[in-house]
Amino acid sequence: MKELDSMLKGTMEEISGRVTKVSELRQKIGQDVLLRGWVYRHRRTGNLAFVVLRDGTGIVQCAIKNDENDKSAWDAANDVFIDSVVYAYGQVANDERAPGGVELRTKDFKVDFKGEPFPVSKDQSAEFLLDVRHLWVRSQYMTDILKFKAFLMRTCRSFLDERGFLEFQPPMFVGNAAEGGATVFEVQYFNRKAYLSQTGQLYSEAMISGYPLVYVYAPSFRAEPSRTPRHLTEFWQLEPEMAFYDQAMNMKLQGELVETICTEAAKKQPDILKKFGRDPSDLAAIKAPFDKMTYGDAIKKLQGMGLKIEWGDGIGLDEEKMLVKDNTQPVFLTNQPKEMRAFYMKINPDDTRTVKDADMLAPEGIGEVIGGSERVSDYNELVKRLKDLGQKEEDYKWYVDLRKYGTVPHSGFGMGSERMVRWLLKLDSIRDAIAFPRTMNRVEP
Ligand code: 4AD
Ligand code: MG
Image 1 (cartoon, rainbow, N blue to C red):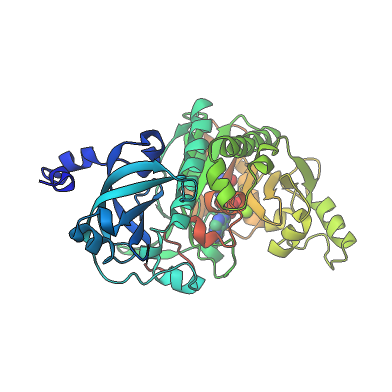
Image 2 (cartoon, rainbow, N blue to C red):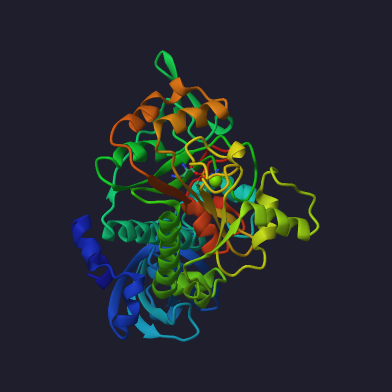
Protein backbone atom coordinates (compact mmCIF):
# COMPACT_ATOMS: atom_id res chain seq x y z
CA MET A 1 0.00 0.00 0.00
CA LYS A 2 1.15 3.56 -0.64
CA GLU A 3 2.59 5.54 2.30
CA LEU A 4 -0.19 8.14 2.39
CA ASP A 5 -2.96 5.53 2.16
CA SER A 6 -1.55 3.63 5.10
CA MET A 7 -1.15 6.84 7.14
CA LEU A 8 -4.83 7.60 6.63
CA LYS A 9 -5.89 4.17 7.98
CA GLY A 10 -7.23 3.82 11.51
CA THR A 11 -9.25 5.94 13.87
CA MET A 12 -9.45 9.74 13.67
CA GLU A 13 -7.25 9.91 16.75
CA GLU A 14 -4.61 7.64 15.21
CA ILE A 15 -4.56 9.66 11.98
CA SER A 16 -4.39 12.96 13.90
CA GLY A 17 -1.42 11.59 15.83
CA ARG A 18 0.50 11.21 12.56
CA VAL A 19 -0.14 14.77 11.36
CA THR A 20 2.58 17.43 11.69
CA LYS A 21 1.62 21.05 12.38
CA VAL A 22 2.81 23.65 9.89
CA SER A 23 4.36 25.63 12.75
CA GLU A 24 6.65 22.65 13.52
CA LEU A 25 8.04 22.17 10.00
CA ARG A 26 11.19 24.23 10.56
CA GLN A 27 12.38 21.58 13.00
CA LYS A 28 11.72 18.76 10.53
CA ILE A 29 13.89 19.69 7.54
CA GLY A 30 14.75 16.55 5.58
CA GLN A 31 12.04 14.42 7.20
CA ASP A 32 8.92 12.96 5.62
CA VAL A 33 5.71 14.34 7.16
CA LEU A 34 1.96 14.17 6.81
CA LEU A 35 0.16 17.53 6.59
CA ARG A 36 -3.56 18.15 6.86
CA GLY A 37 -5.41 21.38 6.25
CA TRP A 38 -7.29 23.67 3.93
CA VAL A 39 -6.17 25.01 0.57
CA TYR A 40 -5.07 28.61 0.99
CA ARG A 41 -3.93 29.23 -2.59
CA HIS A 42 -3.14 27.07 -5.59
CA ARG A 43 -1.58 27.48 -9.00
CA ARG A 44 0.08 25.44 -11.68
CA THR A 45 2.99 26.17 -13.98
CA GLY A 46 3.48 23.45 -16.57
CA ASN A 47 4.40 20.23 -14.85
CA LEU A 48 4.54 21.78 -11.38
CA ALA A 49 1.53 22.42 -9.16
CA PHE A 50 1.70 24.50 -5.99
CA VAL A 51 -0.88 24.11 -3.25
CA VAL A 52 -0.43 26.39 -0.27
CA LEU A 53 -1.95 24.66 2.73
CA ARG A 54 -3.07 26.32 5.97
CA ASP A 55 -3.79 24.53 9.21
CA GLY A 56 -4.37 27.35 11.71
CA THR A 57 -0.75 27.37 12.88
CA GLY A 58 0.61 28.75 9.61
CA ILE A 59 0.82 28.24 5.87
CA VAL A 60 3.19 26.13 3.80
CA GLN A 61 3.65 25.60 0.10
CA CYS A 62 3.36 22.02 -1.17
CA ALA A 63 5.13 21.55 -4.51
CA ILE A 64 3.74 18.67 -6.57
CA LYS A 65 5.74 17.60 -9.61
CA ASN A 66 3.88 15.75 -12.34
CA ASP A 67 6.75 13.40 -13.13
CA GLU A 68 7.49 12.55 -9.47
CA ASN A 69 3.90 11.78 -8.45
CA ASP A 70 1.27 9.20 -9.31
CA LYS A 71 -1.42 10.37 -11.64
CA SER A 72 -3.97 10.30 -8.78
CA ALA A 73 -1.90 12.74 -6.70
CA TRP A 74 -1.20 15.04 -9.65
CA ASP A 75 -4.88 15.09 -10.63
CA ALA A 76 -5.95 15.72 -7.05
CA ALA A 77 -3.56 18.68 -6.68
CA ASN A 78 -5.02 20.19 -9.84
CA ASP A 79 -8.62 19.72 -8.83
CA VAL A 80 -9.04 21.78 -5.66
CA PHE A 81 -10.76 24.97 -4.63
CA ILE A 82 -9.70 27.44 -1.98
CA ASP A 83 -10.67 25.86 1.36
CA SER A 84 -10.86 22.31 0.02
CA VAL A 85 -9.65 19.91 2.74
CA VAL A 86 -6.48 18.07 1.75
CA TYR A 87 -3.76 15.70 2.94
CA ALA A 88 -0.20 16.06 1.66
CA TYR A 89 2.69 13.69 2.30
CA GLY A 90 6.29 14.47 1.47
CA GLN A 91 9.70 15.74 2.51
CA VAL A 92 10.26 19.05 4.29
CA ALA A 93 12.85 21.17 2.50
CA ASN A 94 14.46 24.54 3.11
CA ASP A 95 13.29 27.05 0.53
CA GLU A 96 14.00 30.70 1.15
CA ARG A 97 11.64 31.77 -1.66
CA ALA A 98 8.65 29.94 -0.18
CA PRO A 99 6.36 31.62 2.38
CA GLY A 100 7.64 30.59 5.82
CA GLY A 101 11.03 29.53 4.46
CA VAL A 102 10.14 25.83 4.07
CA GLU A 103 8.40 23.82 1.40
CA LEU A 104 6.93 20.34 1.15
CA ARG A 105 8.42 18.28 -1.69
CA THR A 106 5.20 16.38 -2.10
CA LYS A 107 5.21 12.63 -2.71
CA ASP A 108 1.50 12.04 -2.45
CA PHE A 109 -1.61 14.20 -2.26
CA LYS A 110 -5.27 13.56 -1.52
CA VAL A 111 -8.39 15.69 -1.46
CA ASP A 112 -10.60 14.81 1.49
CA PHE A 113 -13.38 17.31 0.73
CA LYS A 114 -13.47 19.41 -2.40
CA GLY A 115 -16.57 21.53 -1.80
CA GLU A 116 -17.63 24.47 -3.94
CA PRO A 117 -15.68 27.46 -5.28
CA PHE A 118 -14.89 29.64 -2.23
CA PRO A 119 -16.82 32.91 -2.49
CA VAL A 120 -14.48 35.12 -0.43
CA SER A 121 -11.23 36.90 -1.17
CA LYS A 122 -9.54 39.79 0.55
CA ASP A 123 -10.15 42.31 -2.22
CA GLN A 124 -13.85 42.34 -1.50
CA SER A 125 -15.60 45.24 0.20
CA ALA A 126 -15.71 45.54 3.98
CA GLU A 127 -19.51 45.17 3.89
CA PHE A 128 -19.31 41.96 1.86
CA LEU A 129 -16.69 40.53 4.20
CA LEU A 130 -19.05 41.26 7.10
CA ASP A 131 -21.90 39.49 5.27
CA VAL A 132 -19.73 36.36 4.91
CA ARG A 133 -18.04 36.71 8.29
CA HIS A 134 -18.77 33.01 9.02
CA LEU A 135 -16.29 32.24 6.19
CA TRP A 136 -13.99 35.27 6.56
CA VAL A 137 -13.09 34.27 10.15
CA ARG A 138 -10.94 31.54 8.54
CA SER A 139 -8.65 34.09 6.96
CA GLN A 140 -5.08 34.57 8.16
CA TYR A 141 -6.02 38.19 8.81
CA MET A 142 -8.83 37.35 11.23
CA THR A 143 -6.93 34.43 12.78
CA ASP A 144 -3.98 36.71 13.57
CA ILE A 145 -6.22 39.35 15.14
CA LEU A 146 -8.05 36.79 17.24
CA LYS A 147 -4.80 35.18 18.38
CA PHE A 148 -3.60 38.62 19.43
CA LYS A 149 -6.84 39.38 21.24
CA ALA A 150 -6.71 36.07 23.13
CA PHE A 151 -3.15 36.97 24.12
CA LEU A 152 -4.29 40.39 25.32
CA MET A 153 -7.11 38.90 27.41
CA ARG A 154 -4.74 36.29 28.90
CA THR A 155 -2.21 38.99 29.75
CA CYS A 156 -4.87 41.09 31.52
CA ARG A 157 -6.09 38.12 33.51
CA SER A 158 -2.62 37.08 34.65
CA PHE A 159 -1.72 40.68 35.49
CA LEU A 160 -4.68 40.87 37.86
CA ASP A 161 -4.49 37.28 39.14
CA GLU A 162 -0.84 37.81 40.13
CA ARG A 163 -1.90 40.87 42.13
CA GLY A 164 -4.44 38.86 44.11
CA PHE A 165 -7.60 39.83 42.24
CA LEU A 166 -10.63 37.53 42.21
CA GLU A 167 -12.49 37.13 38.92
CA PHE A 168 -16.23 36.67 39.23
CA GLN A 169 -19.18 36.52 36.84
CA PRO A 170 -21.87 39.20 37.05
CA PRO A 171 -25.35 38.70 35.59
CA MET A 172 -26.04 39.77 32.00
CA PHE A 173 -29.78 40.31 32.62
CA VAL A 174 -30.04 43.34 34.88
CA GLY A 175 -32.73 45.60 36.28
CA ASN A 176 -31.16 49.01 35.64
CA ALA A 177 -29.27 51.12 33.12
CA ALA A 178 -26.02 51.82 34.96
CA GLU A 179 -24.41 53.64 32.04
CA GLY A 180 -27.43 55.72 31.04
CA GLY A 181 -30.84 54.96 29.56
CA ALA A 182 -29.95 56.14 26.07
CA THR A 183 -27.81 53.10 25.25
CA VAL A 184 -29.57 50.30 27.09
CA PHE A 185 -31.11 47.27 25.37
CA GLU A 186 -34.46 46.40 26.85
CA VAL A 187 -35.57 42.77 26.85
CA GLN A 188 -38.84 41.13 27.74
CA TYR A 189 -38.11 39.12 30.87
CA PHE A 190 -41.20 36.98 31.54
CA ASN A 191 -43.78 39.47 32.75
CA ARG A 192 -41.45 42.40 33.32
CA LYS A 193 -38.79 44.44 31.52
CA ALA A 194 -35.11 43.78 32.03
CA TYR A 195 -31.97 45.05 30.34
CA LEU A 196 -28.79 43.61 28.91
CA SER A 197 -25.85 44.56 31.10
CA GLN A 198 -23.93 47.69 30.07
CA THR A 199 -21.31 47.09 32.77
CA GLY A 200 -20.47 44.66 35.55
CA GLN A 201 -19.34 47.51 37.75
CA LEU A 202 -22.29 47.78 40.13
CA TYR A 203 -21.95 44.07 40.90
CA SER A 204 -18.19 44.44 41.39
CA GLU A 205 -18.94 47.14 43.94
CA ALA A 206 -21.16 44.66 45.77
CA MET A 207 -18.30 42.14 45.82
CA ILE A 208 -15.48 44.31 47.20
CA SER A 209 -16.75 44.37 50.78
CA GLY A 210 -16.31 40.59 50.77
CA TYR A 211 -13.11 40.38 48.78
CA PRO A 212 -11.32 43.71 48.29
CA LEU A 213 -9.89 43.20 44.78
CA VAL A 214 -12.19 41.79 42.10
CA TYR A 215 -12.65 41.93 38.36
CA VAL A 216 -15.10 41.05 35.66
CA TYR A 217 -14.14 40.12 32.09
CA ALA A 218 -17.43 39.87 30.28
CA PRO A 219 -19.55 41.23 27.45
CA SER A 220 -21.10 44.67 27.76
CA PHE A 221 -24.09 45.66 25.67
CA ARG A 222 -24.73 49.19 24.41
CA ALA A 223 -27.47 50.29 22.07
CA GLU A 224 -25.05 52.64 20.31
CA PRO A 225 -26.86 54.18 17.37
CA SER A 226 -23.57 55.49 16.06
CA ARG A 227 -21.74 53.93 13.15
CA THR A 228 -18.21 54.81 14.13
CA PRO A 229 -14.97 52.85 13.86
CA ARG A 230 -14.91 52.58 17.67
CA HIS A 231 -18.41 51.49 18.69
CA LEU A 232 -19.88 48.01 18.91
CA THR A 233 -23.19 47.08 20.48
CA GLU A 234 -21.55 44.08 22.16
CA PHE A 235 -17.95 44.25 23.38
CA TRP A 236 -15.72 42.60 25.97
CA GLN A 237 -14.98 44.81 28.91
CA LEU A 238 -12.36 44.20 31.61
CA GLU A 239 -13.55 45.81 34.83
CA PRO A 240 -11.42 45.71 37.98
CA GLU A 241 -12.83 47.19 41.19
CA MET A 242 -10.69 47.86 44.24
CA ALA A 243 -11.59 48.57 47.90
CA PHE A 244 -9.40 51.13 49.68
CA TYR A 245 -8.18 52.57 46.36
CA ASP A 246 -8.43 56.28 45.66
CA GLN A 247 -8.37 57.68 42.14
CA ALA A 248 -4.57 58.15 42.21
CA MET A 249 -4.08 54.43 42.96
CA ASN A 250 -6.70 53.57 40.34
CA MET A 251 -4.81 55.46 37.60
CA LYS A 252 -1.50 53.98 38.72
CA LEU A 253 -2.89 50.46 38.32
CA GLN A 254 -4.29 51.29 34.87
CA GLY A 255 -0.91 52.63 33.78
CA GLU A 256 0.83 49.47 34.96
CA LEU A 257 -1.73 47.27 33.20
CA VAL A 258 -1.43 49.07 29.87
CA GLU A 259 2.37 49.20 30.10
CA THR A 260 2.39 45.44 30.80
CA ILE A 261 0.09 44.69 27.85
CA CYS A 262 2.32 46.74 25.55
CA THR A 263 5.68 45.37 26.70
CA GLU A 264 4.42 41.77 26.71
CA ALA A 265 2.98 42.22 23.21
CA ALA A 266 6.28 43.63 21.96
CA LYS A 267 8.14 40.69 23.51
CA LYS A 268 5.79 37.81 22.70
CA GLN A 269 3.82 38.85 19.60
CA PRO A 270 6.34 40.68 17.38
CA ASP A 271 5.38 38.72 14.26
CA ILE A 272 1.69 39.54 14.43
CA LEU A 273 2.46 43.18 15.31
CA LYS A 274 4.72 43.53 12.27
CA LYS A 275 2.14 41.97 9.95
CA PHE A 276 -0.24 44.76 10.96
CA GLY A 277 2.32 47.49 10.43
CA ARG A 278 2.99 48.01 14.12
CA ASP A 279 6.64 48.36 15.07
CA PRO A 280 7.04 46.34 18.32
CA SER A 281 9.46 48.99 19.60
CA ASP A 282 6.57 51.54 19.58
CA LEU A 283 4.90 49.36 22.19
CA ALA A 284 8.06 48.55 24.12
CA ALA A 285 8.39 52.35 24.56
CA ILE A 286 4.99 52.75 26.27
CA LYS A 287 5.91 53.60 29.86
CA ALA A 288 3.69 54.42 32.84
CA PRO A 289 2.97 56.64 34.68
CA PHE A 290 1.05 58.43 31.93
CA ASP A 291 0.50 62.18 31.90
CA LYS A 292 -2.71 63.62 33.27
CA MET A 293 -4.67 66.46 31.72
CA THR A 294 -7.67 67.95 33.48
CA TYR A 295 -10.84 68.60 31.55
CA GLY A 296 -10.28 72.33 32.16
CA ASP A 297 -6.84 72.19 30.55
CA ALA A 298 -8.19 70.07 27.69
CA ILE A 299 -10.81 72.74 26.94
CA LYS A 300 -8.06 75.41 26.92
CA LYS A 301 -5.90 73.28 24.66
CA LEU A 302 -8.80 72.75 22.23
CA GLN A 303 -9.59 76.47 22.25
CA GLY A 304 -5.91 77.11 21.51
CA MET A 305 -6.27 74.81 18.50
CA GLY A 306 -9.05 77.09 17.23
CA LEU A 307 -12.03 74.98 18.29
CA LYS A 308 -15.19 76.74 19.46
CA ILE A 309 -15.70 74.94 22.75
CA GLU A 310 -16.40 76.06 26.29
CA TRP A 311 -16.20 74.76 29.82
CA GLY A 312 -19.24 72.48 30.23
CA ASP A 313 -19.25 71.18 26.66
CA GLY A 314 -18.73 67.49 26.08
CA ILE A 315 -15.47 66.07 24.80
CA GLY A 316 -16.46 63.65 22.08
CA LEU A 317 -14.66 61.49 19.56
CA ASP A 318 -13.46 64.41 17.39
CA GLU A 319 -12.17 66.40 20.36
CA GLU A 320 -10.40 63.35 21.80
CA LYS A 321 -8.72 62.77 18.45
CA MET A 322 -7.46 66.34 18.41
CA LEU A 323 -6.12 66.01 21.94
CA VAL A 324 -4.02 62.90 21.22
CA LYS A 325 -3.18 63.12 17.54
CA ASP A 326 0.49 63.88 18.16
CA ASN A 327 0.91 61.74 21.29
CA THR A 328 3.02 58.63 21.45
CA GLN A 329 1.95 57.79 25.02
CA PRO A 330 -1.55 57.41 26.45
CA VAL A 331 -2.81 60.31 28.55
CA PHE A 332 -5.49 60.54 31.26
CA LEU A 333 -8.29 63.05 30.76
CA THR A 334 -9.44 63.81 34.32
CA ASN A 335 -11.91 65.88 36.34
CA GLN A 336 -14.81 66.17 33.93
CA PRO A 337 -17.93 68.20 34.86
CA LYS A 338 -20.19 66.31 37.26
CA GLU A 339 -23.38 66.98 35.26
CA MET A 340 -22.22 64.86 32.36
CA ARG A 341 -20.70 61.99 34.30
CA ALA A 342 -22.23 58.87 35.85
CA PHE A 343 -24.04 59.00 39.21
CA TYR A 344 -21.53 56.65 40.82
CA MET A 345 -18.57 59.01 40.34
CA LYS A 346 -17.31 60.84 43.42
CA ILE A 347 -17.32 64.62 43.43
CA ASN A 348 -13.90 66.24 43.56
CA PRO A 349 -13.46 67.91 46.96
CA ASP A 350 -10.94 70.37 45.47
CA ASP A 351 -13.22 71.45 42.62
CA THR A 352 -16.83 70.51 43.28
CA ARG A 353 -17.88 71.26 39.70
CA THR A 354 -16.07 68.08 38.68
CA VAL A 355 -15.77 64.39 39.55
CA LYS A 356 -12.79 62.15 40.33
CA ASP A 357 -12.80 60.37 37.01
CA ALA A 358 -10.32 59.61 34.25
CA ASP A 359 -10.58 58.40 30.69
CA MET A 360 -7.38 56.93 29.33
CA LEU A 361 -6.92 58.27 25.80
CA ALA A 362 -4.73 56.13 23.58
CA PRO A 363 -2.29 57.93 21.27
CA GLU A 364 -2.30 58.20 17.45
CA GLY A 365 -5.77 59.74 17.46
CA ILE A 366 -7.41 56.63 18.97
CA GLY A 367 -8.98 58.23 22.03
CA GLU A 368 -10.72 56.57 24.98
CA VAL A 369 -9.74 52.97 25.70
CA ILE A 370 -10.41 53.01 29.47
CA GLY A 371 -12.98 54.82 31.59
CA GLY A 372 -12.72 54.84 35.36
CA SER A 373 -13.37 56.74 38.56
CA GLU A 374 -13.39 56.82 42.29
CA ARG A 375 -16.90 55.88 43.45
CA VAL A 376 -19.28 57.57 45.82
CA SER A 377 -19.01 55.47 48.96
CA ASP A 378 -21.19 57.57 51.26
CA TYR A 379 -24.93 56.89 51.43
CA ASN A 380 -26.17 60.49 51.59
CA GLU A 381 -23.76 61.63 48.90
CA LEU A 382 -24.97 58.89 46.58
CA VAL A 383 -28.64 59.68 47.14
CA LYS A 384 -27.93 63.34 46.43
CA ARG A 385 -25.90 62.54 43.33
CA LEU A 386 -28.76 60.42 41.91
CA LYS A 387 -31.24 63.19 42.68
CA ASP A 388 -29.07 65.91 41.12
CA LEU A 389 -28.82 63.86 37.92
CA GLY A 390 -32.58 63.36 37.83
CA GLN A 391 -32.38 59.61 38.48
CA LYS A 392 -34.62 57.59 40.76
CA GLU A 393 -33.17 56.08 43.91
CA GLU A 394 -35.57 53.13 43.69
CA ASP A 395 -34.04 52.10 40.34
CA TYR A 396 -30.78 51.49 42.20
CA LYS A 397 -32.18 50.19 45.46
CA TRP A 398 -29.72 47.39 46.14
CA TYR A 399 -26.79 49.50 44.95
CA VAL A 400 -27.64 52.32 47.34
CA ASP A 401 -28.13 49.72 50.08
CA LEU A 402 -24.43 48.79 49.81
CA ARG A 403 -23.60 52.18 51.36
CA LYS A 404 -25.32 51.22 54.63
CA TYR A 405 -23.01 48.35 55.55
CA GLY A 406 -19.24 48.20 55.62
CA THR A 407 -18.86 50.80 52.86
CA VAL A 408 -15.27 51.83 52.08
CA PRO A 409 -13.53 54.21 49.68
CA HIS A 410 -13.14 52.40 46.38
CA SER A 411 -12.35 52.86 42.71
CA GLY A 412 -12.37 50.95 39.47
CA PHE A 413 -12.19 51.12 35.73
CA GLY A 414 -13.34 49.49 32.51
CA MET A 415 -11.12 48.70 29.55
CA GLY A 416 -12.63 47.96 26.13
CA SER A 417 -10.73 44.95 24.74
CA GLU A 418 -11.65 45.67 21.13
CA ARG A 419 -10.55 49.30 21.40
CA MET A 420 -7.20 48.13 22.77
CA VAL A 421 -6.78 45.63 19.92
CA ARG A 422 -7.74 48.28 17.40
CA TRP A 423 -5.10 50.63 18.78
CA LEU A 424 -2.29 48.11 19.13
CA LEU A 425 -2.83 46.47 15.72
CA LYS A 426 -3.66 49.76 13.96
CA LEU A 427 -7.00 48.43 12.68
CA ASP A 428 -9.16 50.80 10.65
CA SER A 429 -12.30 49.61 12.39
CA ILE A 430 -13.17 48.09 15.74
CA ARG A 431 -15.35 45.57 13.85
CA ASP A 432 -12.26 43.55 12.99
CA ALA A 433 -11.31 43.27 16.65
CA ILE A 434 -14.11 40.76 17.34
CA ALA A 435 -14.99 37.55 15.51
CA PHE A 436 -18.67 38.30 14.91
CA PRO A 437 -19.24 42.04 15.33
CA ARG A 438 -22.59 43.34 16.49
CA THR A 439 -23.43 46.82 15.29
CA MET A 440 -26.52 48.91 14.75
CA ASN A 441 -27.48 47.12 11.55
CA ARG A 442 -25.91 43.72 12.04
CA VAL A 443 -26.79 40.72 14.19
CA GLU A 444 -25.78 38.13 11.57
CA PRO A 445 -23.84 36.00 10.86
O1 4AD B 1 -16.53 54.46 29.77
P1 4AD B 1 -17.45 53.30 29.93
O2 4AD B 1 -18.84 53.44 29.51
O3 4AD B 1 -17.35 52.92 31.46
C1 4AD B 1 -18.04 51.94 32.10
O4 4AD B 1 -18.78 51.15 31.60
C2 4AD B 1 -17.66 51.84 33.57
N1 4AD B 1 -18.73 51.08 34.26
C3 4AD B 1 -16.33 51.18 33.68
C4 4AD B 1 -15.89 50.99 35.10
O5 4AD B 1 -15.49 51.96 35.71
N2 4AD B 1 -15.95 49.78 35.61
O6 4AD B 1 -16.82 52.04 29.17
C5 4AD B 1 -15.54 51.59 29.51
C6 4AD B 1 -14.75 51.28 28.27
C7 4AD B 1 -14.50 52.47 27.37
O7 4AD B 1 -13.39 53.21 27.77
C8 4AD B 1 -14.27 51.80 26.03
O8 4AD B 1 -12.95 51.32 25.93
C9 4AD B 1 -15.20 50.62 26.09
O9 4AD B 1 -15.46 50.35 27.46
N3 4AD B 1 -16.47 50.90 25.40
C10 4AD B 1 -16.80 50.43 24.19
N4 4AD B 1 -16.13 49.65 23.31
C11 4AD B 1 -16.74 49.33 22.16
N5 4AD B 1 -17.97 49.74 21.81
C12 4AD B 1 -18.69 50.53 22.65
N6 4AD B 1 -19.92 50.91 22.32
C13 4AD B 1 -18.10 50.91 23.90
N7 4AD B 1 -18.51 51.65 24.94
C14 4AD B 1 -17.51 51.64 25.84
MG1 MG C 1 -16.43 56.31 28.94
